[in-house]
Length: 201
Image (cartoon, rainbow, N blue to C red; front, top):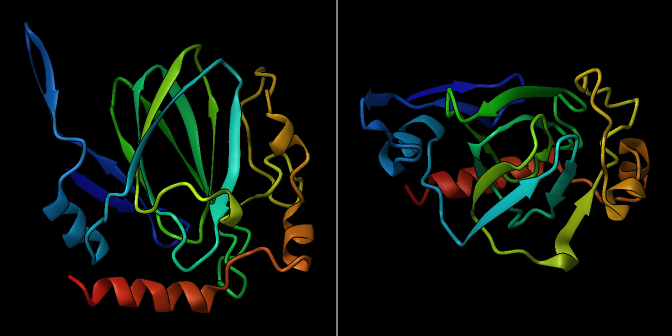
């Protein structure tokens, strides 16, 4: 598998090697050793999630307080989504920057989102199935969001698809409001947390 760091530091696109024949396709979509070599520390697995989304469904921008935050390793098992990572770490040189990867059941790429980064996706097809490996379990008291259509973030969502948001995401604060409310992770705190993870390698 091939790892490519995105324009948002500490987020990675992972492209697997697929082996196909007349029976179908086989691939490894996660390998602990390859992940550790690329990212610098292993991925602790605490929870695995699956979401099934209608075309146009937008889920995010979601993040958790650091420490411990919640890192995610995401792939699309069926259909297609536009997967987006946003740097919401206050003090980061790339604060407010976003990058995207199309995840689908053809290239079968994955995206790794480190703790403290914002994550959001839009389903490009009906019944788009995403699977997530998470470093921490869901904790509603530590989970937060930023509005995915915030013009200051300026994600370039695909034209011709009407965004479908949950009530929670529809009422999420803008990036500036979340920063003013002290909800966003600190870049320095995140860097210290990443260093602690690397020390356990």
